[in-house]
Image (cartoon, rainbow, N blue to C red; front, side, top):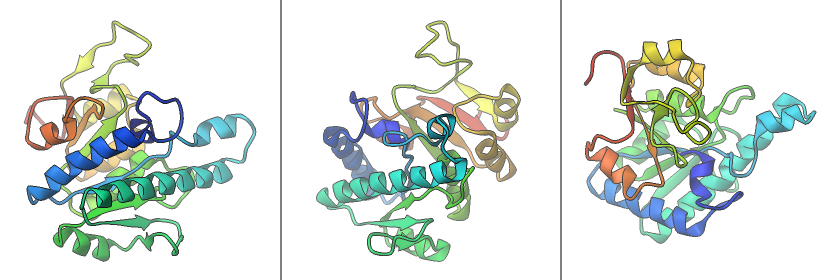
Length: 231
């Protein structure tokens, strides 16, 4: 879940209405017996690359970004629990007063008990994006699919559709094709991890009505990235 997906129409921060809509969708998915783990970004509060460009040390900027993801994780956890969904936040950096440390086996146990797990703090390392964190955590918990919820972008395009009205949308790609095209929807490390572990990816617009539920139920929206073929 990108940080920008939590902004709604705002230019910064979290839109409580959007947060509640997302929580309600996750609740419906959880009630179907589907195990849900979420990696949150922090771009609605902090952009490490922008801070670095302004002269900030890259590692320091990235650690600040990790803190932004924790803010989003706590907000999402609170919204889920307001909707009567039991959830746990695990952080890759130590903030023991507000989140569990990331422990793979504990995360899997939470999922087995039908708790929603929110992974915060990225990978815990600078120079790594939350895209990479999402791919890594998905592989660690043996996820069936990695869902990439974007903000007002309904799939993978050959260029930014918000800037180029003639941008071409891909309905399906292989991991190899996505890497060769150097698409910016996810970073190369994340795509590589998914390719190596044959983890399917679906990129979709989180702002479309009930998009999380529709993707989970198999509706053909967004862009699918798989190891081979059209499945």
